[in-house]
Image 1 (spheres, rainbow, N blue to C red):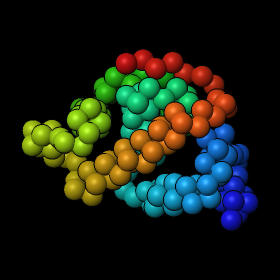
Image 2 (image 1 turned 45 degrees about the horizontal axis):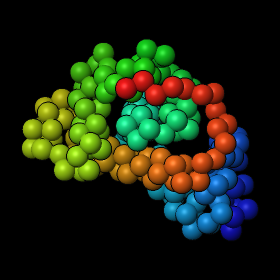
Image 3 (image 1 turned 135 degrees about the horizontal axis):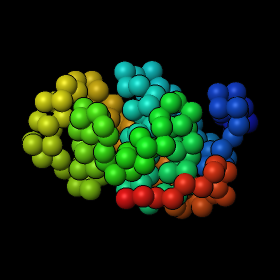
Image 4 (image 1 turned 30 degrees about the horizontal axis):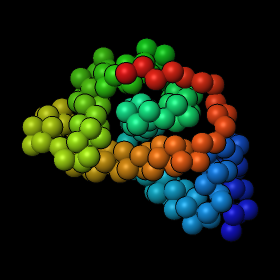
Length: 165
């Protein structure tokens, strides 16, 4: 099963990131992670928004590996250096994106206990219930990879990016 999962990763990403390789020590862990990631990949959030959520989550969780990986991937999906830097500070020139990033920040800082105002602000900026559900799910997926990284400490195999909070 491990070989199947790593082959699928290689085929999808063109490589096997060290974090995924370390997850492969437990095929159930890697399988669960990839299944969750795959399901969310079929969602309504854009690739740039997914990368923003991943980058901000990694920043808040002090995960240099994941900050580096999502800065690299964010650039690959069209985010500028300025947008990537602003994302680490829960900011964007687009007020709708800023609202989502502030929500992600509140979600993480308050362990999911967001206020009615946090939620209302997100809705006021045009985020649908489907999108909000996916934002929460992407945060959960990325918390998992951040925490796994903290435990496994895989060697960084992306260009290093500093955390800029």
